[in-house]
Image 1: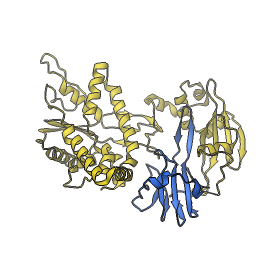
Image 2 (image 1 turned 45 degrees about the horizontal axis):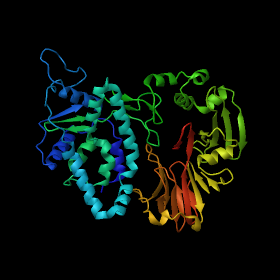
Image 3 (image 1 turned 90 degrees about the vertical axis):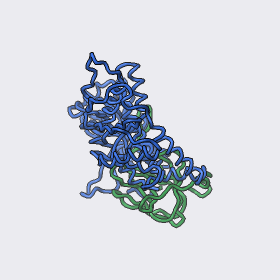
Length: 357
Length: 108
């Protein structure tokens, strides 16, 4: 089995990989599936560009009209049956099902679930979330009408996820000579890819990926995920935000925050602006103070109060200072102790740490 | 009860240990042989237990988890001082934050 740390790094890798190694992986995966190698391997700069390329290929050619998509890097892909049928099941679905059944048989249901926890489970949640966001972003940008949306969604179902298949690949033997070695080689060097009978379309990995410690897309001053063709996703601690919204964050004022009607966006504004700064400038006063921290309350018009506990990190920073942080707690909270205890899901009376670091 | 950053470690009487602890397999140790209570995705920093013991996921991806350290253990983290745990059972709880309409975990 492969190591989780290595696949974790693969799932988050950015920048171009080794194209030759990825292409060799694609050919190997076809051979392992008992198929002829694809006649062509077409590189794209993002999964969005890959989907555009596939849409262009599916479009009937009209000699009277130039239907080529200016955003598709390889114009020579249009025309019926250029690529043939999807072979995703043969190349990816079937070998995985076989490996899973084999391991399941060897380990038993109990053993399998333990094995999954030891390997892929830890990578599953963060990669699945990322994949869902990329899919949604592509649908948003390319689906102009219902018919196109269906086409885009179907094409997304044909995708192998390359580096984002890390959770699954982590659970199986993918060393050289194993049934999944070709798939693993693609995953180590490329993003999503589409295997068809006559051609494979591969997307490069993103150029930028910014996440927070919990693994969520997160960036305040640019795209959290960005590809070379300009396909970008913006997010703040996992919450999708519009691009213009981020531009505005650097020019925030307490009045602007109070005036924002969308509660989710206002929350992002508050976090970006800094609760401490907002509390200071809006003249908020502490409601309660005890040995666990300080409780603050800010009233917002037309919305529930923002109630926060201010907590001091017990381990000093290298420079000797202590980091202060704010955590939002339910509006019903009355004391700092009750607030801190709530963040750990215990009652105020039960919260009594013997030691804190 | 011990707290290391966004993780709270609450002692549990032997009689209060849920039955699931006996039924469920231990969480795997990481590449350095540690039991990881919480892992930072970006820095790779971890709240981790060094030494013999078992860690069992009680529910969900973010816990809580049950920790058994028969000989006692140390909880370490790259940015927090280590904590010594006396031998016994513990419930490990991740810190969370209130978000109107939902709740999310904290990662420090």
